[in-house]
Length: 416
Ligand SMILES: NC(=O)c1ccc[n+]([C@@H]2O[C@H](COP(=O)([O-])OP(=O)(O)OC[C@H]3O[C@@H](n4cnc5c(N)ncnc54)[C@H](O)[C@@H]3O)[C@@H](O)[C@H]2O)c1
Image (tube, rainbow, N blue to C red):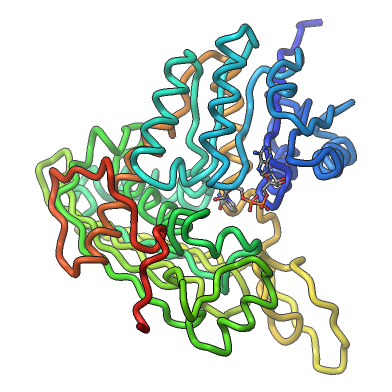
């Protein structure tokens, strides 16, 4: 019988997104989860047990030391899923182990690649110096609703009528799930850093022909952006935030933006002006997470919205409900007519992402969404912060090497 080769994957970071990735693995054929590392062995063990229970790994080793995981003989590639302020320290440790002889093929890193352009560039440089294949984990460009519509629009519409000119992408929910996300210094900013990274990359992807790197098709020209503290800087909500997330900043004094809007202008490969618009917020109270996408071109358009689900459930007021997140991510209610995202890992793109990245690493090939895309996204986001801070349109070329947003420096407060 032919030998089947399987990539051994080490998961670093056993929190919210670590569990999402592990659960997506039921749809990944070319790789098994073989080890998990986290700050504590308890949290690593909890996720290792989940991996074993759902059958995506056997004898999954739990580590409280990243270096030990990298040296683990069964680990061929690592997925870095730790908080933004630990990114550089974790990557440095991995690269040192590889340079010391650990046999690793590839590294996949969650969004945003860095809190600043300087951090993102340093991470890319470290990974390339170690000779690793690399992937930037931007799940939305692997979401089936997006990849399928993208392929159809380009094949049937753009081929005849011309290239698309406007992408509109939005990601909204009622706020993140851990204290560190709310801290501008730890996270790198507010919702612009946390969620606009998705929207700008989804926009670039939609505006670019299938199989082409957005960097080769879209040349940035300018960005006009604004940010605001709409909800969580109000005194009552600032107090609620401190109760919900002890250790988070007091948003009356040191808020991060909970709303961001940006429009990037590019010139595309045909020499035409095109625009990617992004709108993101932590101040949307609806059923739960809502991702929406539109692509407009001459004679065609596409649209997709994750809250328009195939399934819905209705629960009357007579039924007492426990609070849960079993219908969709960042769920806000348990009664009335509720959308149900049947397979969140697939819908949001994690399954397709991990299937593609694992298959590429196993074949020794570079995945389509590389850390270079992560650096490009960091540049586009930092230019947007600069525009929001100055109230001016930022035009390329722009040097963002030393730029740190006011929100990340703790000096931004629009209510003052
Ligand atoms: N793609 C998406 O939509 C998406 C969604 C959520 C989070 N994320 C990204 O994933 C990353 C993690 O977010 P999260 O929500 O899982 O955070 P989290 O706080 O829920 O979990 C982080 C995990 O990392 C571990 N950790 C922290 N520092 C570490 C270190 N130095 N070494 C090893 N382990 C360490 C913690 O113990 C914890 O298990 C962030 O960069 C975030 O932006 C992406």
